Amino acid sequence: MIKETIIYSVVQIDFSWVGNEPRPSIIATYAKREDAITKKDLMRKIATIDQTKYQFQVISIQVKEQGES
Image (cartoon, rainbow, N blue to C red; front, side, top):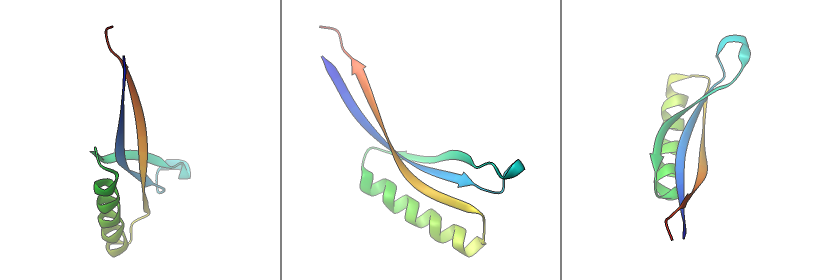
């Protein structure tokens, strides 16, 4: 039996990293997509206030687990 789980993560991308190469890092992980979008929007507002070079995206990761039969 295969169990599938979808994980939603808010990823912060730092464009001010050495050599202008983007550096992604996971800020938070959620089971619900709506929770991840809320966090992304909050982080985007904070970054706008701070005038940072960060961008935020929500990514989904699909995990498949093979259970014993």
